[in-house]
Image (cartoon, rainbow, N blue to C red; front, side, top):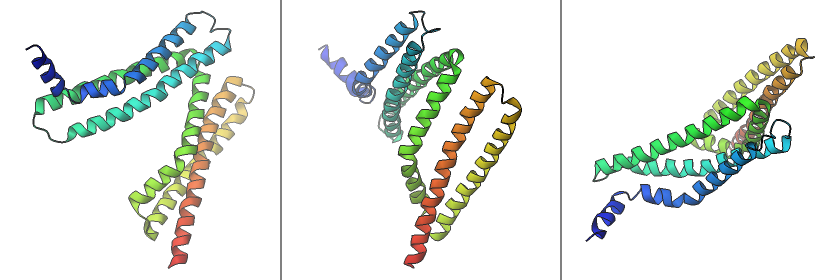
Length: 228
């Protein structure tokens, strides 16, 4: 007799319970990384030991990497709940639970990043730039293929994409020029040089991606013209 309400509850929560079950290993790893980072920070050596600081930062970014898997799973799960179902209340409740859970989860990670940024801003920015570079190198071609498939492979569509990337490229060149011109009066300020170098590296990554994208779409356009 006692199994009936439990079975009914499990059946009603047919999205929430499997979501938590699928990600329990990832949640456990995030908790372990967070506890280890907290333990390292409690050693009170982070002010003079860069190895500990880098260890903490890498653990936090590993937590963020694991969170991307949960965000992907949550996005797919929430998308499946958008479809109409018989029990609107249970569907809405599960959507509310997972969405609220992810919002608080992301708010926790954001507060953690903000706290570390207040202590070690330069290292956080450099790690962020390195991750962005890694992302562009591995997903840049996929992103361009996605754009081409969405806009189309017609001559007009390819020309439109090339023009858009050319505008972005010109804007980046203008920004880089203003950055390097503004660097001259502050060439003796180390903090200003570091900040300028960080901005410069970020724009150089975008510049490289925009330039390679122009060549990518221009090559597709030339092949299409020659095939006519």
